[in-house]
Length: 73
Figure 1: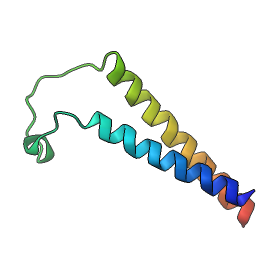
Figure 2: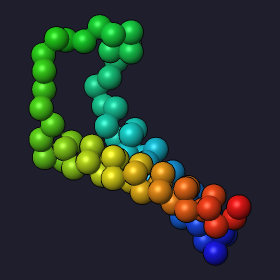
Figure 3: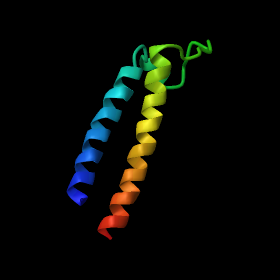
């Protein structure tokens, strides 16, 4: 059971990393140091779906990590 949980965590972590990298489009050096264009944009369409999927998978990863610790300990 613990091995299955670890495999699920590996798959989730890779998926979360890919989703975060897909969201990072257009982030130049200026936005890294806090300099943004100052225009507030709302997320729409695919960008909103990627954002929500990232949050959902991160929450799922957290709960699976807690469950895996409680099973193994």
